[in-house]
Amino acid sequence: MSKFVLVTGASSGIGAAIVRLLDNEGFHVLAGVRKNADAEKIRSEYSDRVFPLIIDVTIPSTIAAARDQVGELVKQHGLVGLVNNAGIVVSGPLESLPISRIREQFEVNVFGQFAVTQAFVNLLKTSKDGRIISLSSVSGLLALPIIGPYAGSKFAMEAMSDSLRMELRKSGVKVVLIEPGVVATPIWERSATSSDDQWQTNLTDQESQRYQGMMSGVMGLKDMSKPTTAEQVARVIHRALTARKPKPRYQVGWDVRSTALFLKPLPTRLRDWLIQLALKRGAKKNRPT
Image (cartoon, rainbow, N blue to C red):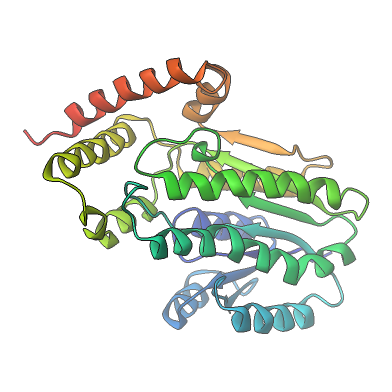
């Protein structure tokens, strides 16, 4: 029996790794991308089981058009999986980061994801064992400074997915969260290159310098960690798609497991102090030699 899975954000990083693995495992993959060039690349790199879809999670018309296309493709088999993978990282101090940038973060990582979920949930119900798999993060468990918008979006995804899981309990659709640690993908590099200096408006030179130090610390911690690979995350997503009773949550990587087990339960002041120490270490590591 043909098994169809829709993956958003399929052009690179974790999304591309998911498409590659599912294609190799014999799934029919509906690969959501925003650009025609990415769609052409997918056609050339994968088997004919992979069908590219133009879908921008922030543009309702593309979601509706994709739903109609998918409905025709899967009408005899149903849709067995939706992988909410599309996402961006917005970084900067919350006291001065333009509200438009924070809205952009939530539009993509939260509202866009649930717009897609709402559009495709009925197709998932027809498969009798549909799965909604959403990419969270270690930042959905613990918020660091400077990446507050990103962490906030992942906290929101965690909470709303918990509600959705209980709401859909008797529908046959299972809701799963994937919580990777730091993953070696282009998303962080794109965030760094697309950031601007608007957040420095109305800050003193001393405040700007302090925040620059925090940014350096966060990036240093990322570079010091042993990153989880996109392929590791893809394998866990495959497990969540194929398990008879998938877990509500899968943690991928030593850093997210240690955060959940040791750091998150600590008293808040102690946890803040330890994070500040770690940021100083990260900034030192990230300092140009």
